[in-house]
Amino acid sequence: MKLFANNMQRWREFRELDKRDRGRAVTELIINNSLYILLFLAIIFIGIRSPRFLSIPSLINILSLSAAGLPIALGIAGCIILTGTDLSAGRIVGLTACIAASLLQSTDYGNKMFPGLATLPIWLVLLIVLAVSGVIGLINGFCTAKFKLHPFIVTLATQLIVYGVLLLYLMIGNNNGQAISGLSPEFNDFINGSILNIAGTPIPNFVWYALAITLIMWVVWNKTRFGKNMFAVGSNSEAANVSGVNVTATIMLVFTLAGVLYGVTGFIEAARISSNSAATGVNYELDAIAACVIGGVSFVGGIGKIRGVILGVVLLRLIFVGLTFLSIDANLQYIIKGLIILVACAIDMRKYLVKK
Image (tube, rainbow, N blue to C red; front, side, top):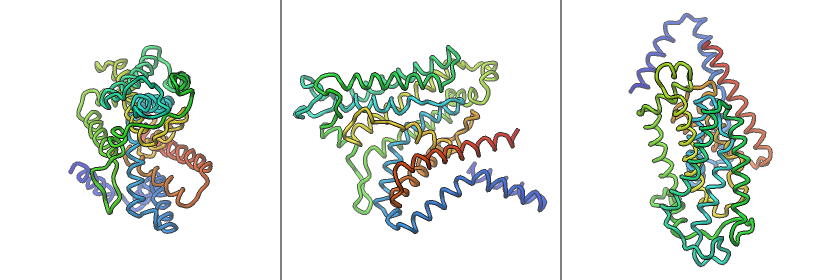
């Protein structure tokens, strides 16, 4: 209802403009939404070239891939709202995925990492994974807030540290650096099982987990004091401090929450990809950052919405799945991803300069 009222107000304001101003307003609207327009045109083009792209199985696959990447995007979105970023996100996902996989291997698996260890309860492993990722996020937040370091530098350092820890972890027990697989059926069913299918195509359980997490994050961002403080600090940390906001605590909490969300992503990835190695999670943070900037989360700070993050994740996944349908070289997709980030950030900065 509020969105409808805002749109009606904008329409009334638009009608009151003279012809020249209307032309400028339309031009601004097109420029500010040019990336969305290009992405939607690309989706239509791909759908025409390859009709299977918009089939039920393909759309459910896109939905599943989007759900798998949504928690990490929500985590990084909070960091971007604080005018920062998090380069360690992908490596944290890889570490937590390998930890979860190693503790949830089948007891009868021949190449079990810890042969003398029984398969732990799923809920216990989830808590372990969230604790590990949360502590790493807390370290990122502490160094950023207490030492006044830029998150880029802090998370670049922790990215390397976490990767080193992951490599050492993979050498423990009988693993000797190999990929971790042979997961227990219970864990696999918990993540990849299905309670609902559409036209015979099952929707994985982790889609519902991602939706539940998204709803929780919406409440946190929009209905709690922490959420209001996060946006206040992102908009102007000095003004927030004068207003009584504990800036240090807010920054630490944002990065800790982001770490927890990376842990959720790693827990899901452990079963989703089934075979976890040092390469798990590589460049996941790039996809998440791209999704956030496409969805309108601004590096200027203090600007971002949950629905924007969801839209960005889904649009980006639609494009990359579509490129696969068009048989575009996987290496070329990195170039396209970089261009999308560059264009999205340029449009975002243009909006900021126009407002000033």
